[in-house]
Image (cartoon, rainbow, N blue to C red; front, side):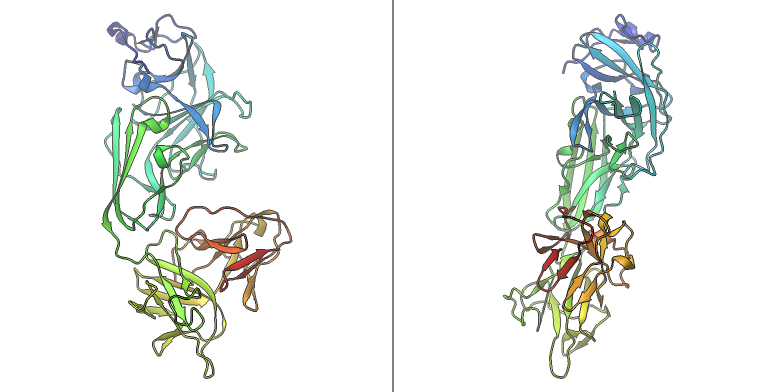
Length: 477
């Protein structure tokens, strides 16, 4: 795009006038050299008397449809507190002001919105009566303009949100960790986070204000993204690291026009590889018959966002005088480094160099190699989501019950997507339900592990899930 040249004499006339179709100056800025159509941010708050291609807004992306939305525009830009700015449309040489009287927009009650950001919104005013806009404090801001061309909003609007970038992902259980503040610079800023603990194949995204999106309408049909993924794309795929270890993560903003991704770059550098095992196995009389080559050996599942932690749910028999049912663990499928306990062990006994449970039944085994914990407890498996009547964890009415060597869910109370999880043993804290989640897909129990959201399986009211953990299969009927 071509840079806009500005006459020096225009600087003295900053914000002298605004009009629907100005002659050659607007807000003290000469627009004669703007030839490319589009929306621009201009005014004293930008710190520049020149309107160049770098101030051009991007075509807006509706997070709901994952497609560009007609009449929606976005821009990340540094604004100076207390000073004025406008949006201006250049269309075939015609310059038109766009502004709004901004009022606080409370998004804290809206799911996935940036509750830690200050968001303001106003009804769009076009032309010579368009009010100048201001922000209270100097910083990076996200501006969203929606002309409401489809008529699905209450009114055409402008949204302005302050931006505090951070990360959400495997390093914090998909919560939010903000970057340390950096000196504000209108042209470029770089944020850095060191010693970020990531598991193997761990994923994350950049986001601001502990949100994923800003909802423009009450119905939730239009949402602007507040996150960046692969290739710095809003709503892009999760960023993934291959190796477990400590990482330095940087994010750099540069003032640029065009697509939002053009203004952001990032790096992930592994500064210290982890020596924690990335795999863990259980072998025993009933789990591979002590043969590491057997398909019966159990591969434990990584606990999402908890490096060095693994889990499994299995039907386990108790050892008696007549029958031996011992088992043990190892980070390799070989007799090297095998163990029974790690020092802080609950819910089982160790005898003859093997683990044993007191009674036959379903057990959840949770092993934390960082804190040297092996915990076993009668399994508590629950349904979650609309088909189970809501999103509250550990509801007794959503607990699966044993029928022989299978676990069976209560009947679904509504149509919906099936979500299921195993609760961590009671001695384990800080593990959210989705971090030990799984689904039944094509008759196979598929575990989320350390990965992202799984594919969804729909079911109808009245159906039930049956799970055979030892065989790794399930059904929805």
